[in-house]
Image 1: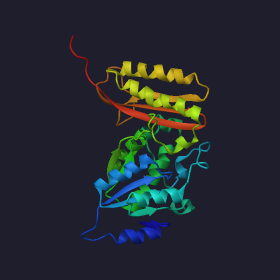
Image 2 (image 1 turned 120 degrees about the horizontal axis):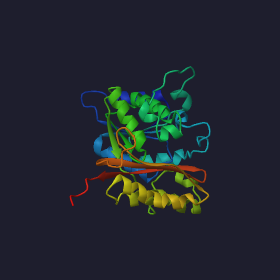
Image 3 (image 1 turned 90 degrees about the vertical axis):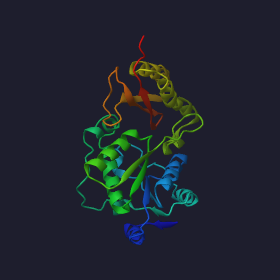
Image 4 (image 1 turned 90 degrees about the horizontal axis):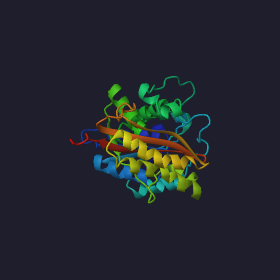
Length: 287
């Protein structure tokens, strides 16, 4: 495994791959603190490409002024061991100053899709995500890139950017990986106390209950039965829980038929968590 600590080092490694027999490069962007969810992305990437590239970069542009950028976990040596064990070929670990040099002015605007739900709760978040992803696509030059479906709105924004900017990158979504208690894997889970973790389980429990329902109305009601109980806990603050169109993230009507995504976000103690599930609402049978 090769480790590039600068863009110049990566460019030298990447140029060696060019030519008529160039391998198909599959890319997994991460912010480090790698867990089994990230490892599932790497595993999927290995089925889509010949050369696997992982980047590790905690992107300051996607954090708000009162968010957890400073305390975000950065166990780089552990992350590099995971990458080596999982057969990654190249790891790019760029610095903030190299990716964002002084004097930069141009950023990506996520548009309407990036202004609702997560974008509303975290103004500018998706602009920061898309800006760094576009920069890294230009640097890495992959044919395919793998992103986790846990960040469903992020995935939709990236897919939209690829279409709108005519980027020659195939975007692949990887299923959510969960811990044994159902909690979606996240690098932020380490911040939860034992009691907070028990309350955080309400997010996935609400989604599980919603997924058994046959209509938007009943799915919403079933989920809120669970979430209302969680809101009685002082450490739990629900941000949103809504059922949306997977392409636009606009809320669907009660009579919606077909695929939709139930997205939830909450703050548990000092930790903000998100989760989602896809539900296929089918027409009610006759009679």
